[in-house]
Length: 153
Image 1 (tube, helix red, strand yellow):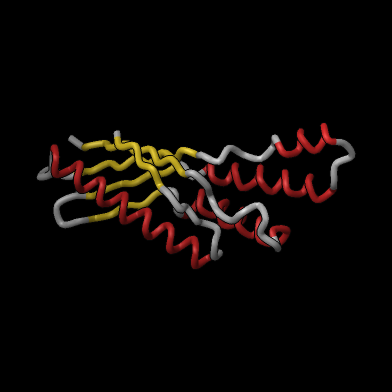
Image 2: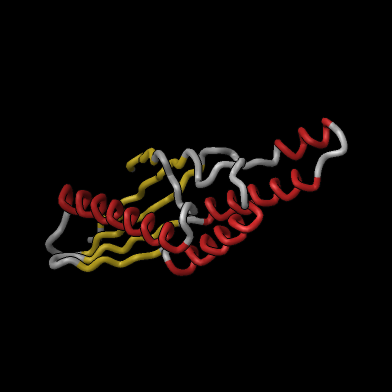
């Protein structure tokens, strides 16, 4: 029977600072990379000698956060005609914290219990390191999670 291990990662921020120069060019590029992530990096299968691990991740909250941030920056650049409008624009910035759901399914006849849980945890950790490297080679700075808080479950 397969073990299904669900994990939630709370990400405090998601990338560059709002004060970075060149956001007009960088934000659309980063959004494009995150759109590719949904198709190319949301699932991964790892085959080991005694089992197979299938990892599935929903990265859409990060993409939505990037898009929302970009929209607010464009509105700010256009300018506000009043303090009320400026306040309204600033309220549009996304929340700093985002949760990402990751599921690992461990398949194998000779793996169960604590060993399967350890394998799932290690596979997710490997996936996240690879993910971080791939994204930052593709578009430096687009995946800058300074603090990952994991809620294992």
